[in-house]
Image (tube, rainbow, N blue to C red; front, side):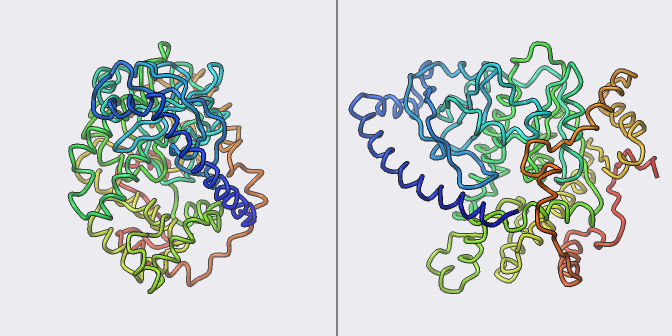
Length: 457
């Protein structure tokens, strides 16, 4: 990834933050004078549920990164009116961000389908550019709305994955089927997890994934993500955010036992370089935080700062967290090692779930390449879908296209990215991490338990 593009984006973002800060100060004064702020405060206290959702018009958007979670301050927006929380149930309104205080929905044009994987390979890439308005409600209203909706009535297929393993192609296949809504990598669960994870790091209290507050928010986030607005859809196929698979695989079966669960992965020496190439040098903010966290003086001055890329890929296992955030390990957390840790953590938690008897099966990308007919017959059999000649035709059409088309990692863009030279020293470093997670070494074959496509061998 061209470093100069990353630097320019960061510079623009710094300028934007100055403008936004000045604008926000003026806006808060205006809202206080006109009573908007007073109404917001009462809604946060649990009052006025019927008018607790704030509709805002978006004028400017800026995140400073090519791929980013979308927070309130990334949108320069103005108040329109207060509406009932059920306003969020419209088809063109999608849940974007959840914290412990508020839920943010993105509102696109009514004719824009942000779930169309052929146009938007990832939902989180669609929501920022298509947002014309935002809908923000206090978390108490979001929970109440989720409880009123209840669990989804349609069949739900949840796809966990290691990233860069063919999972987007799988989403595109489900997107091609007429009775399926395919949702590829929503950010809402990831933002929720990041918020609670950072609070855990700073307070070192109860593990966030076992707290009642987190589980309640997680469950209702899923409910609102799968809101019943698609009357013609009998099936939802959800692909986890790549960094959330290791958490989702621990919670989905616990909270939604009727969901069908699938884990997709790829060979070690194929997957890690594939993910490393677009990430290499592409996150200036992560590099800055790594510098601060590993510098003797700066880390003493800013003890709460941790390498943001390492925070992104870390899990919820206290033993793993202590090991990952050891100063020596942090110092080695360059982009390549980040991709190794992400892959290893995700595979580790899949193996752990399978060992506990969670009814999740695995499929391997290399098996799809060898024999797609047998691959999809095995997959469809597990999730209770009938394989027909028409479905196979639609699958063939979907797989012809570049599944990453329109994203920063499509085939054309990848041609222009600088080559990544993986040295023997890097491989040795990767092997030390893989061994920690009880995975094969770099050059060894990987076959995870319950891999239903292993019949292809």
